[in-house]
Structure formats: C-alpha cells, structure tokens
Length: 355
Image 1 (cartoon, helix red, strand yellow):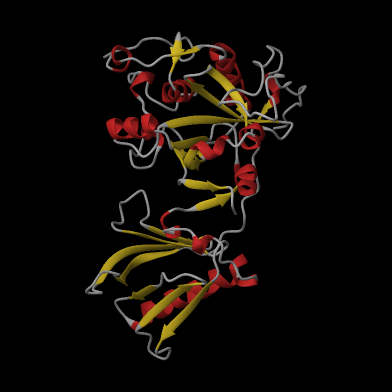
Image 2 (image 1 turned 180 degrees about the horizontal axis):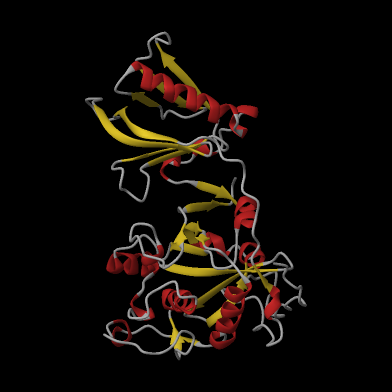
C-alpha cells in the first residue's frame, strides 16, 4: 500500500552546535494533519542461506579444557551457540559478514574436530559432533556460509579487537537504518549510577526503551519519555550528531515482526497525537497499582516503558488487563520473553557505531 508523503517536521532552533545540549527532543509535535508522514519503511530481506542447528561439543577455555555440549545454530552467515536449546539469548555469536575467520578440519578424511579461528583474535572455537559424518556436514555448511560472507571477500578484524566481541550480535548504523520500521524498539543501557541502581532493582540489563517512528522522508524518530522533557520525539540523526549515544554502554535494536498496514499507521498516529507533550512521572504508588483502567494514550503522564507498553496496547499487542505502568524496559528484552499478541519481537542486535 502506497504511503502519501507529507511535509517535513521542522526542528526546534534549540541547539548551540558549540555546546551540545543534554538529551532533548529534536522538534515540535507533528501537526494534526500530518499523519501520513509516518511510514512503514519495509525493506527487502536478503536471500536466505540454509539453516543448520543441533548439539555439538565445545572445548572449554578453563584450566581443564573439558568438552561441553552446546546448542549451535548456523543461519544467515552467523554462528550462534546456546547453553540450552530453549534459551532466548545466545552465549556466543560470530557474524561472518563482520569477522574474517579461518576454519580448520582436523583429519579431513574422517573429521574428528573443527577449529574456527577469527582473524586477529586469541579466541578460538573447537567443536566435535556425535559422528564424523555429522561433523563433516557442519564443516560443509560452515564453508557455504563463510564463502558467501563479506569476511571472505576482505580481511575484517576490527570487531575482533573488542573485549568479548562474541557475546553480542551486532549491526552497523547503516544496517539499522535499512532495517528500521515503525513500531520497532530500541533498548538502552545507560552509564550513570542511577541507571545502574535501576537495573539492579528491576533485575534487567536495560534502563530505557523507545519506539521507532519511520517517516516517508527517510528520517527515523524515537518516541520516548524522559525525565527532562516528558513525552516527545528525537530524530536519530540528531541523537548521533550530539553524541548522545555515548551516554550508553549499549543500544539494542529489536524488530517488531508484524504485518504492517494503514490501520496500524493510523492508530499509532492517533496515539502520538494524544501523548505528545505529556509529562514524565514514576512513583511507587503508580508502579504498584493493582488496576489501571485508562485507555492507551489517555494516561496523564508516563515513564519510558509505560509509554511503549501503552503504544503497543493501542495496537492490541499487549493484554488490556496488565497496566502499562507495570512494564519495565527489561520486559521488552528477550530475557523476559514478553508475549506479543499476534506478533513478535526479533533478536537483540547491538547497534555498533564503529562498524
């Protein structure tokens, strides 16, 4: 369905380029007649490579170098392993488009183990399977994915220099912009002490969350609630220009997997109109309320995750019986495994500005 193009939102003349401000919103609230500015920004998915998964033994790096069973997944030129097949978050990931690797098969005629060596890294991965044939199948699959990757075309070792680079799946800013669609979310892990305390109290790895609004102009907006300004929208371009990303040790992207249509767009546009400019508030009384009957967007004020929960409720993605103020940023991370009605949130991808 074609989306009409509206006039561009005009930025506030707030900013002094010599002295970048604290985190603020980029521009005024959208005009009432400007709903068509929000678009879906759907993108063409790259061709799928064959997926392979199963249990393999991995040699540990502890003193005794014993072997441990891990659940491996090879998909889209990435190799993951999980401690359990039911885990939501991988314990290891290597993206062959970002890292150049060498693969060695020990005793190729009857393979006994596979060694994966990332270029420029001391980290190696040695694997065994239940049988030589199964290991040979994995070696062939790895060869296929690696030979199709950017890491095969040129030497890529920048990411390997980062501490524990294998812990997080990553995308570049350019890849994030290409993938971003209205309704997707960003999770933030702040560096300040107050945020660390919040993460401890809420048992979460994140302390802030925002929802993406993608415009027909190509701009990406972040709908969020902050203590400084309440509810508003900041352009991603401004977010980077003023180096606000440096306030966070990690920014994580999750795609909302849903069939987007004009009805969804209209609902979100109406929601933004209702919440724009509302204040920020978080109190114990608010958090521990047993029941909240307000319709999405009719709340008087918000904290960050309450705003995103309310937006998702307006789309019918979260149950009505759970108050929006009972959601923390961590509920939108994969460790909480939040149930989205009729849709799902994709894997966590760290947006890495250095790629």
